[in-house]
Image (cartoon, rainbow, N blue to C red):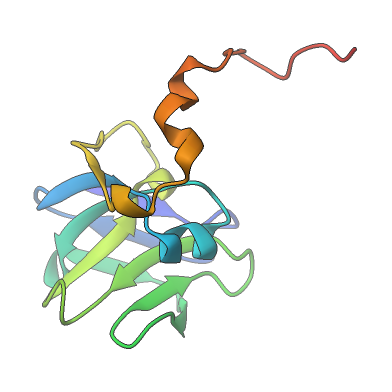
Length: 132
């Protein structure tokens, strides 16, 4: 079982069993919704996920619904009955243990921002580097 929550704690969830997949999505819809270059997801059967609290829903396309906390704005879930019938995608960075479900791959690379191909080559810092 994995557990998670939004940033303020108003919405909590738990998921049992193993996800169908855990992946990093680069689609333009995920990027726009999160304001980030990619979003991590783990797909579970809807009946394996228990949600406490009342997420706000936003219909981001014809069949896609994004669920988020109306208090702090944290994106939490994605449902699409056409693409993922009977399933719910959980944003994996909202897990209490974000390392619990490492991604198995990248999806929607056709939409990835071009600089993602070389992002791993950028300098890495444990914290913000010193200013000039």
